[in-house]
Amino acid sequence: MKLFIVVLMVFVVLLVGCEPEPGQISGTVTGFGERYRDEFSVGFGTSFETLGTTGINRNGQYSFENVPTDEDLMVWISNVSRDVYETRKISLEPGEAKVVDFSVHVVSGSAGKPNIYLYPAEETEVSVSLKFAGEGYITTTIPDYGDGWNVTITPDGRIDDEYDFLFYEGVVDAEAQHTHGWLIVQEELESFFRVNLTAYGFRGQEIEDFVEFWVPRLTDKPMYVIYPQLNEDYDNLVALTVEPKPDHVLRLAYTIRGVDIFDGRLLAPEMPTASFIVPQEREGFWVTEWGVLLTDEDFKQYIH
Image (cartoon, rainbow, N blue to C red; front, side, top):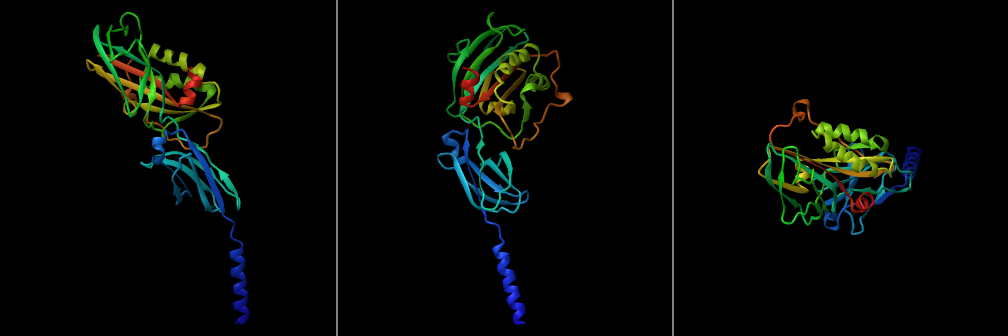
């Protein structure tokens, strides 16, 4: 009996001694304005269990100590609504310290070259105004904006017999959705945008204008993550008011981020069904708008 107890104690000591040394996870989160820092947190765990969560310090940094090293793990960043922006799969060797950085993007960024197209049923005097969320504001417009655009528009979309669309740029001070989107390789951007814009309901010159301006600028990365901000999502960033009230409004902004690699998680956006596809012949007063949302750094690179 004494021999059995001694052997058992040795066995337990060996088991304890064989436990793998825990690891460490740390990193930096970029892309959010300082005022939004407290709205984000980083978590880690398995497919079945959250093992830890933490906030982000004033420098955008986070860290976890005593992280298990005997199983596959996931690290993610989410907001206060628990919307997960990005998830990374990792594994740690005993005692290993791994750096996992995140970028949430397009909070306090820029709206790049949105175009507003208007097609009244007959020649009409139209008032158009924009309201940016938070502390956002307009930086550039064509024609001059003043307190709002007051223009005369013909059914073919001609504005004051001089312009084909209303143009603006501005600073966006609100949070765009980053859960639903696509990962597109650079060589396929043009075909993607043509198909995607058509599926949402854009037509003819609206699509050509987008492709002509944006595709030649998106060449510095092998892949691009693209998040659509459709109608209500776009309104939450920049509200659009048109008088007289249009019969139909279609607004779409793409949040675009170039990447060298991407191992995050994207949910498939809900696309229009066949019964909701805009007919080639539009009836009534139509307003359509497309744009691109960028971080300030990308805006300077792609636009100026």
